[in-house]
Image 1 (cartoon, helix red, strand yellow):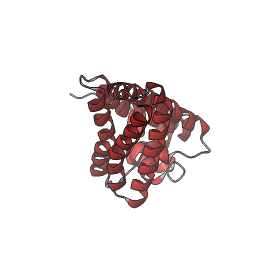
Image 2: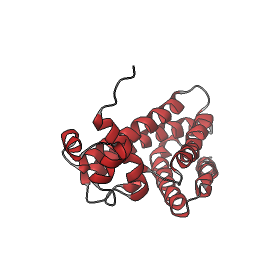
Image 3: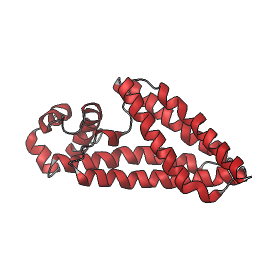
Image 4: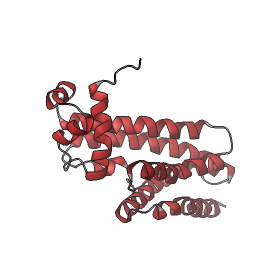
Length: 198
């Protein structure tokens, strides 16, 4: 006999695609409860507020994404190969999510409202973790190219901004095409940084 899924978990997993599709403000507690087959009393027993559920949802999304990204960073191989795998992950994960949800979702934090500062802070913590992973890969890839490894901080920030921009474009156009520009763009940046240091 399978274990019963806790109500809080059902609510989180019901809320994630709703918030991702419609945005935090547009999704009501009633809609989340309906999607989770739970009543409002159960919702408020599990969470103090919709904002608390959002913070937990951000953590759940990052647990999955972070585990996949950390596995890429930890795999054997050259820094360049691992960096390519990391960059490919963005398109691959959006492709999977698009098949699952029926639309190009972009980053989950794109659905967070600025009026929920706790959720924005939670998302920023996870973005910092992703930045540190990217920095590790860039350090390895630049060392192999004999490039300046002290450039990894601003490169990681710049790539993060490029990823966010491409995700916004992909979401707005409901097309994965913009994300396919990520890897060639990063390679051009690395070529430029490496040749400038030579």
